[in-house]
Amino acid sequence: MSLPILYIKPGCPWCDEVSAFLRRKRIEVETIVVSGNPSAMRAMVDLSGQSKAPTMDWHGEVLADFGVDELVPFLSKRGLH
Image (cartoon, rainbow, N blue to C red; front, side, top):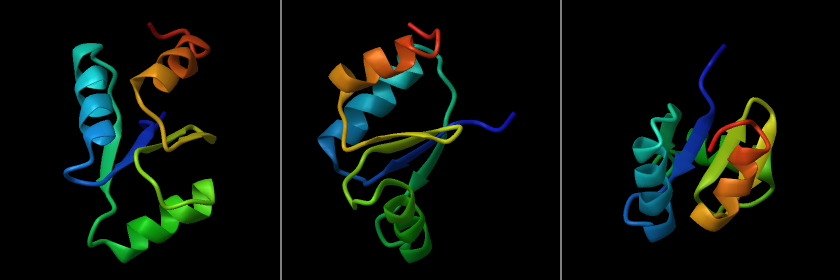
């Protein structure tokens, strides 16, 4: 199964916080930088309907414009803590 996708923008404090949290929890994701990458930005907007990062595509389930506080329950519903 492919990895969940995390769309980020460099310098975004929420993106940095979420990325660090996922590393600490050893949760693997494919990270895609959307800044300066029009096709990646378009994919994120098509997926989530908005242009804010971070945005996560967890095998078809989308969490957009979030921080760790929103990520924890999202992951818990998937059996990850």
